Length: 77
Image (cartoon, rainbow, N blue to C red; front, side, top):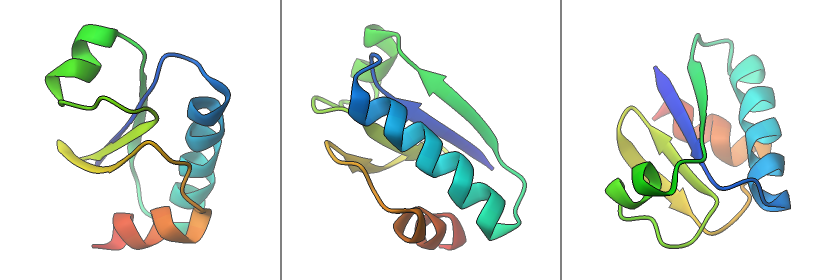
């Protein structure tokens, strides 16, 4: 599983990255977590509001910081 956190380094983006790491640990699954701060790469996903969360190439959230439990639920989908 590949999880990408899209954002240019704002506080929400940093917080979401921490939440994702915590959620992956809580889920017990193996996941590659990547922080994407390249604006062109973010635009490829058509995300206009950061932070964005991409799981296995699918945008699952934009513009908000999810809770650990919300991210765990997305990982388990």
